[in-house]
Picture (cartoon, protein in one colour):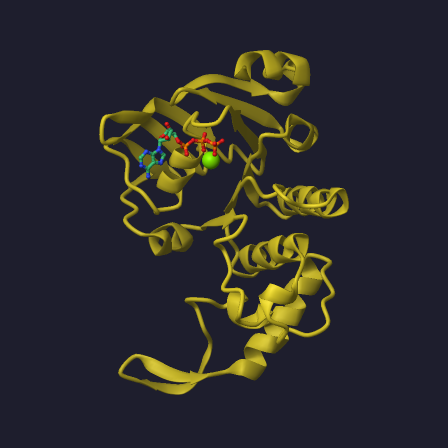
Length: 245
Ligand SMILES: Nc1ncnc2c1ncn2[C@@H]1O[C@H](COP(=O)(O)OP(=O)(O)OP(=O)(O)O)[C@@H](O)[C@H]1O
Ligand SMILES: [Mg+2]
């Protein structure tokens, strides 16, 4: 079957540094969770920045559902159904939960004048509460500023956003850094729940004990290259550890 995303021969240089070298990889062969692992500087974030439209590859192609795409901005990636969660940058802390869910896709009332409309705050609040409850997150009020939430709750809000906008694929770059054990487990549970709803994930973490149990497949990177691409049940944490170091 056609994978949701297919990368062919992606390379990326930052000045003289080759961050990504001829990487070909597929994601979303049916709803699946792919763990993306590797040591510091292996090229993981570079790969996902290209997939999320934040950076452009110097060489290679990306296809989504079999069609070659040219993603120039994060908005292009979002429109294609790819939502990315970084630990700190995904939210505007001073804005409410509801506003963060609708960031860049705000609902407005009536006719827009010069592209600007009156925000439909009530509708956004209502939908936000509904979206949060779908990922089993029951927060006090959709008007709560995101800066008052814990790290795990923030990840939950970002996941609710992906679910609400029917993203096809969620990319999580080190989502469990700085989270408590309980919050980490909640994020891991969310990712598994999303797969049951047909949403694939790419999950980057340094902690193999987080990635391994939830992944269907693991991709190992080192020095900008793809070193391994294995089904979870054909490898082990010990073997992956040896490949990474
Ligand atoms: N904006 C940039 N400018 C210059 N070099 C960069 C830039 N971003 C990344 N690099 C370099 O590219 C290589 C790959 O970095 P990348 O961030 O993709 O690694 P990573 O696998 O995500 O590492 P980590 O696990 O530490 O997050 C590294 O050598 C890094 O120094
Ligand atoms: Mg990184």
